[in-house]
Structure formats: structure tokens, C-alpha cells
Amino acid sequence: RNIHPSGVLHAFRTTAASSKPNAPSNGREEHTFAWISNSLHIELAIKHLEKFGFDRSQGIVFIPYSTQRNWLDRYPNAAPALETTEHGKVVVYLNWRPYPNGLGKLGEGD
Image 1 (cartoon, rainbow, N blue to C red):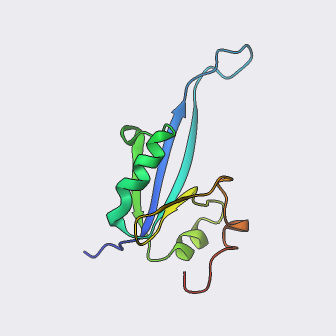
Image 2: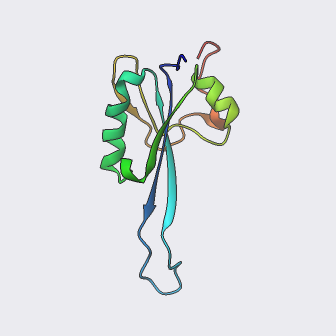
């Protein structure tokens, strides 16, 4: 079976429970996404995510997609926090939502 070389890394982490009074006693689960232009560069994105507490042992999953637009059309409320280029460069979006309404930055062929 052919797998698209591009796709999304879906990573999540659980933050520690707060010790403050009246705060929830359990941890909080956080999700983030990384667009991978070429699956040869997955490890670069994972290493970046690990710097921010997204541990591969907690779950980082690669989901193949033919284009970024296909993924954003399917999940309009999600947006990648970072992406890797075809040549392996990691591009980080500081606000974690680079696309207004999930689609603003992409051209028709993306």
C-alpha cells in the first residue's frame, strides 16, 4: 500500500495537576499538530516537539495526507503549530494558528 510522503503529526501531552486551591486536581491534555511535507523529516519535527514536553511515549502519530489543504478541509478547527519543508527545515508558528480560519495562507495547489 502506498502511503503519502506528506501528512500531519498529531502530538499530545498531559500537563501536571495544579497544586493551587480550587484548581482541577487532574492534569490537562494538550494537542498540537505539525505538517510534514516529506516523511523523511518526521524526526526533526518530533525532536522539536519534545523540547516542549510532547513525549513520543505519550503518543505522537503520523497521519498521511496528500495535501495540507485536504487535512485542513477535513479538520477546519485545527492548524499546524509547525511544519517541515521539503528540504527538512522546521518552520514554527509562534501563535500556533498560522492560517486564519484554517485556510488563509494556502494556495490552490497546496
